[in-house]
Length: 73
Image (tube, rainbow, N blue to C red; front, side):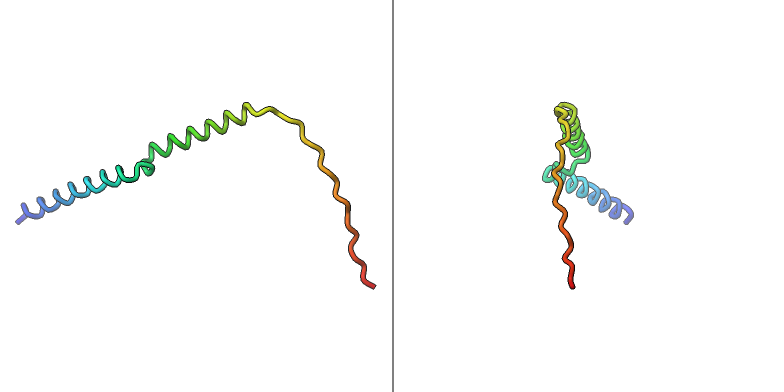
C-alpha cells in the first residue's frame, strides 16, 4: 500500500512541474527576473534622459487679476 501513495505523490509532483513549466511558457512576462530587467532598463533610460535634458530657466508666472468678492447689501 505505501507504494501506491508514493507513486501518486510522485505523479502529482511531476504534473505540478509540467503545469508550472507550461504556465511559464504561456506567461513569460511574469518571470520575475525578466520583469526586474525590464524595469531596471526603463529606469536607466529615464535617468539618462533627465541628465541629458537641457536646463531651462523658469518662466515667470502671470499674475491673475484678483476678483473682488460680491458684497450683498
